[in-house]
Length: 112
Length: 114
Image (cartoon, rainbow over all chains, first blue to last red; front, top):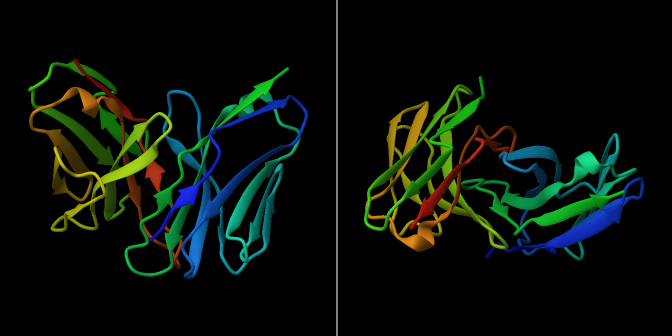
């Protein structure tokens, strides 16, 4: 079955890099997603990667995928106070219903 | 206007009352979902619908029902609310594209059951 795990909290200093980690269990071809939830708002997609890729970069965001260990990470460079939010990792199989399974979310706290 | 609109945004009710949460979308997506968010538990799928005539249970459907009134409308009902249904509820839509299934979420409906 599918299961997505991530740590619940991360605290960083403004200007440092943040690394949010996630592990998943589905061994089939899959898409992996990062969503951001700001206070009082719904989730918004940040980026996604297919499981045949190792890395994807988009401005300050870098996604790394270790397929062997089923480990996904999201690195935010030069973290700002506006990056404070809950970050959700999600996985959806390629095929079938495509319905994503979400992790519990990592609360990122950025302090001056 | 938002792509996915949820009403009400906040609701306080009493145990045993019937509650309906409504969702409408302008994305033109066939797929719609209802999720529940609890602190530390993440998002859990309640119900989903792939088109107007299709309704499917998610992992936590007990105590809930849904209605897909049109492609753009998907409502969630609690027939007899209980306190452990206090949570933040999200509606989402999607249209799978080449395998990726990116969800567009509403802003959420916060429900408190006393």
